[in-house]
Length: 277
Image (tube, rainbow, N blue to C red; front, side, top):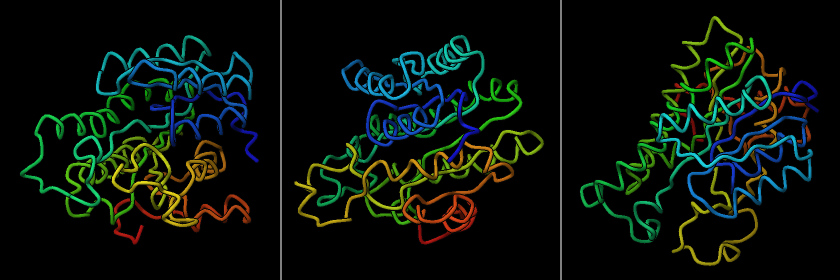
């Protein structure tokens, strides 16, 4: 579907699991070389790298332990990807913390913002907002040098941004969408675009809180698979999306039965306008 992705170099932060894992595998399957990052040591990053290697070959993946809240780590990741493959074309800013980092039972027993642990709140903002800036700051000079590039920032639904008891997660995603608009405007005279991408509903990742129990009991379709993100992400990573910047794409609204351009039109909204999703 997207031959223009073949040979491109991508960075996917938080690529060891969940949405990041699904998108990294999608990029590799389309022929990209992918650097995946994770902030913790563990088997997840290595397992995802091994799966990417099985799909695209050992030379297609680079796994790096890195914390997006660290400027030095972000600069190291961008430099390592460029050193390995010569260029960097695509940045998927996926790494983030969910409300479980603040309150593990936030769905059934939400807490008010004034009762939250200030250190945990700061940690979430540093990852979800400052981390997006740090990684975009580190990668953008490489995208500009390549003469073409993509920044894809992960967001969330409007309802989630405004939900009671969801400070600071909702705040962080409002900030990401505002940042996406500014990035797009700053890059307007270049061949680099910046867009936001969101699932459009709950997805089966570790951000699902433990107080929901067995997610299977919620019924079919209540929780989406992480792979729902792959088709719109591949569109945004391809030349098909040239000229589209500063928008938000809702994966739930992507119709795989349609040609990519038509599916994108149905799933695309301006970041700066309030929508249902």
